[in-house]
Image (tube, rainbow, N blue to C red; front, side, top):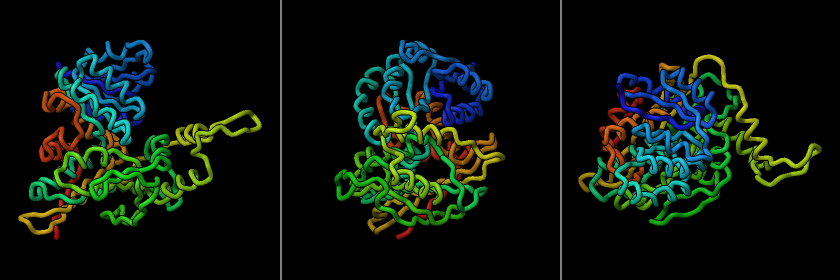
Length: 381
């Protein structure tokens, strides 16, 4: 009999996490939870687990989580705190995919309660945030203690099966709209600063086949924690580099007001542009055939090594998985799938942690490498 582990949320990322946990059927008894029992059962049937519905308004989630050792919350980030409280009440280890900076900071306030309860929580352990944080820690570990001065992070992807005008939604439309509209946070000269969404655009050169992509500041969780966990760092900047067609498409939608939350009159009654747009984007058909995308995480850590100025570049590459997951889905889901197994085994200390302090960076990377993530490191002056 394996360790009972739950995936909370039967959407695209929850489905991917369940499929990847199913690689370890001999060690994991998988439970998929969703407010829609049919969705939970469908995902569980694919992954070889048990699907269960629950009433989100009744406290039923806490009762269900008492039956598992750890939960991977693959939910819209606004639901993280509610899910986290349910896990704490159940005495269940908790991991999620990120709180888009502000929710993450509120979640960190639960540290003492989790520590006293003897359970662990890891916040934002997808590809980015998540593996980006671990790579920043790994880069810092290669430098002199306390010497890190800057951390520059970018996430870039390309679909090799798409023509130059192709437009697709790589993850939650709501999250992307927030990233394009909510003020971003950067850590510069030792201070957190708010900057306009979509500012700071640079042409970022990723390894091929991603190549050069426009990378911009967006609201993200890396600057919420890295400035306080990497000693000495003065600058932490995160940039998102969506495929050019996606970047330009969302920029246009925002520019013409379709991300607005203010109702506008229409012939059939008031409508909220953002809600309509999110519904349309969420209903876009997925491409037929096997996925052919590639995604890179690119993390530059600057400091000294043996007291000489040094820059460490940590790269992670995601490709489509043998299960048929896209590179984007695989990259987001595999870190949380590995994390909850670590947590269920007691390998993460009680309390609430960002990824860079939750895990031994080298050991976590080694586990991900065994799961199919490709890593490389460059060290220069």
